[in-house]
Length: 103
Length: 289
Image (cartoon, rainbow over all chains, first blue to last red; front, side, top):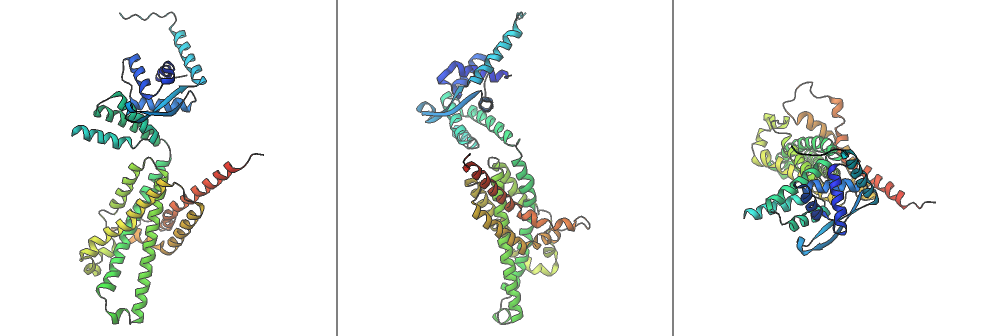
């Protein structure tokens, strides 16, 4: 079962598609959660997910916007898609019948 | 000025990351346009996580427990012990040098040759032990070397603080050690040139090439074993008489006989690494039937 942050990262990478890389994923997560996402958490989680076979990464091309530095590109694998879907189903399942209202 | 300093720190700390990761992270930070302070916090956070992960592995701990502490202490004591011994030899043969006494007297000449040979072998052994220690340290703690190397330096420099040797404490040698060259400069110079420099060169070599070729490893191991066989007795003497005050009964002699094994274990590690590489390489070359 995925962790919450792992799910967020996989979902952000899925949303970004071919444009999924470190900085873009970080921006997606911060926009979605409203919380800061540290580079340390992002890159160690990327490594963990890659070791589990849930995504693959490779060094992309350098761009001027990045000071001539390359991007670490990210792509979700079929196994990663399956795990993220399972996590989403579990959240939906457990949330059924629960109305979250803040009093 | 401040900003340049902070970005300099960012540069320095990001070098502790793997090359690709450093490239990607520095690019991400440039793209996000964050301030130097925020970039530094981010980089340090990642470096801390990576270093913590490295220390979960056994290799850096083996480097600490197997090289930094035992060999640091041993090399520290042996270098001081021999520095004082050489100082006495140099004082006797150089400060009191007369052609008639030293060269024309066969008995004295014999003593001079024996002392020179003994000191030469001791020096070569010290260089060999230090180089292999540095090599093994670099190979075992490649990415944690920025911690283990300064610790090794601290142990080599600090292990003998607050103690002296029988040679130094002996009043008969007072004339030798009153000379600053022998009493102060000699031990420091010897430690720097025969321990720290070779250890640093060994570390540098292992960072460039973690395992030497089979032939080079065999030569290094053979030379180290030979030198240890010749000079190994000095290790025991250095730990018994090179560390005063000695508490009676605090030193177990049978254990001291094992000191040469401590001195040659980094060479043994190099041999094991070379064998592992050779076997691994062969198994990769084997064509499946």
